Image 1 (cartoon, helix red, strand yellow):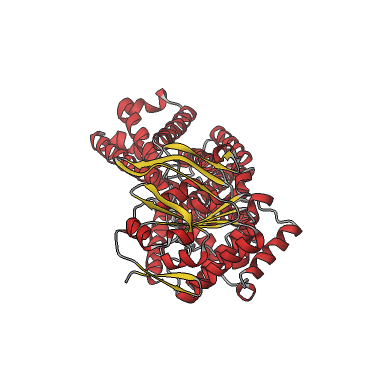
Image 2: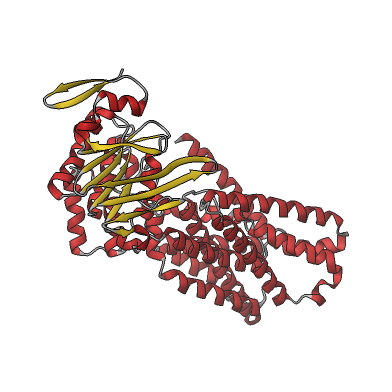
Length: 304
Length: 251
């Protein structure tokens, strides 16, 4: 734990400490990185506990697909006037609302039909997500190259277009969710035993999972709207956390996962900025490493 | 006392339980028997609130189970389902400690720790208490889960095929423990069981389900007779008595 903290500090120092102006900008960027790292790490871990599956991320619910579609469609509708029509913060607000609305619709749909089955929920999300992804690729085909480059800037995750005002909203939302979550943290260990055990041990399963799904949705929506989609990141950091901390206790796992994701994300951004000189984006880097690691997990799981 | 009143449940068109009513006596071992698809597990799941019924009520000590707070209900009634495989990095003792969750909500008091120790002793798990669940054999796992239920210390214990995948030695061990829980601690045990001979040897009452309804409900002695079993399972039975206990031969 301490070593991880040290690494975080190390990266902080390594990044900052050049010039005054850069220092301030970088402080914001690190704040954003930390915020996103904790949001994604936290929500992925909780999501995996709820589903009892270690190779899932909340992305499977189709959040990112909604985001992609929304970004593509507005560029399609407004063309190069996009930025005049929709300011950054309004874009942020709308993106979050769209994603949350989408998530809530699926929850309502699935839970009202008394199916009450996590996998049915995932499947619905997955199918709709695929539909949206295909739709956005289709719309992207229709865009002219200039417009496409506008959309492209949003489609790939990036910490470079950080907006301080947005960061404040996002931090606020994250903080609120954390306050909401603290009361329910004690249930996580029990939820990991599975639905039936959890009910037998007196957890109000439907309500508690509902609360956690809501928290996860908010965190994922906010971080996606802030920096764009980073799919594999969740799988990468949660599994690294399980490897490093062989425990089932969420009181250890949650902060540990936050630290691991901070280290990974800040490290990744550091590489992008200094080693690759901004020639690549962090989402490509993360998806590459994440993808390789994902394959490794699959192969390892097969052996057991 | 568990009173099941007019419970119905169907999946789509298929009716699993058709206005089933039965009163399960307190402080006894009651087995649910019947052929596959007769609705045994469904009934057990509804009694234990894992599954919602389409109609009817379940009363626990004369109070609707839906009127209980989930946490309070978990102090009165516990359920152990089959297929409890968990890939969590969890020691036996940690698993058993979860049994205290309805009381302490995760923060174990000294009294809770003592209950956990007792439960571990009760199932002779002292030697493997520090081992991880994924290193254990099937019989040991089942005993660990049972220890968790013992630690939960509920008046009612429901079990869905507790002997599934166990060899004879471990099956007998589990059944003896259940019998002991009933006799020594006055627990009410309700279980779904496939092996009719285990039901015959260890239970006080037997509920036989057939075609979505309760076909017979009586003391074990009066259900384990050829005519009754023939009706329930549609096959021939021979019953032999040894040491005052009935053994069914249906092979």
